[in-house]
Length: 393
Figure 1: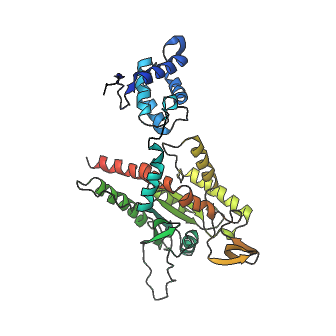
Figure 2 (figure 1 turned 120 degrees about the vertical axis):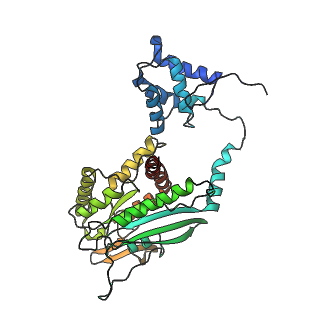
């Protein structure tokens, strides 16, 4: 086979063909004009026009790294920048080749889907909240089955544990042929002591242990083909509906874990608040989160585009989710409802006008489960891995 004439562009980039190099040079000339160079501040905009799509954080970081400390960007440097950028995305704009016939590329999505169905999916959730906040009921309502176990009220003779106890149960749920291995970790005893100064310590230790276990397997000489993932993908923090904002214990726990796990705050038993009280309470909590610099899910990922970032911003604006857990079922007018009967009416838990359980379900499974797992791997675990490997040197 005759070798195509190529020009190598380094800096961990693709090797540009003559045709690709020519087109990139044309982009450069169109924007540089008679100056024959670009200002570093212009490069991001030009690269975005070349790709025909908003730049992700990964691409932005690449551009910034390659233009750091440089006064002007000439054509050769721009070629190196584009080579590095093209190696980090499949959005190639005008450089994308259209196949003239079937190649098999179009079946890749189906292949991935088929493989995922065979393997099944996994989701690990930790629920944290004071006794009586409805953790068990909410989990069973959310997944429409008895996935969580209720702990009975202690008798007068029971010796209450002086610390938070961690218990995990795992089930496999099946719906329309899709299997989900669901692990729910409960934190019994959290906030139930007279002195709750260190009640979050077992929770933090558990989260760190899961990261450490994954790192150990990942860096072992003979690691398994598929590493069992016990890392917690989401921590649901149950806030009691006091209407007064976050308590010191709430703040202390969330500040300890928000860099270790995807934190999703929720208002438990939200039917105890009127709609106006609920919105005012949510606003106070958002102010407290901002004041204490507590990051909550969803996080912006490197590959997110403008549409995905806007969707995540809308989700964040609704946090904390005001939820109601209930397992009562009724049929009315030929329609099936789940909820709770109250003196002022029936609360339909699947109706977003009554409570925000549907939004929580979207965040955990329907829409953002992949993001939960990606954020766990790319943000929280990566931070732990970097710190652990750095400290071991």
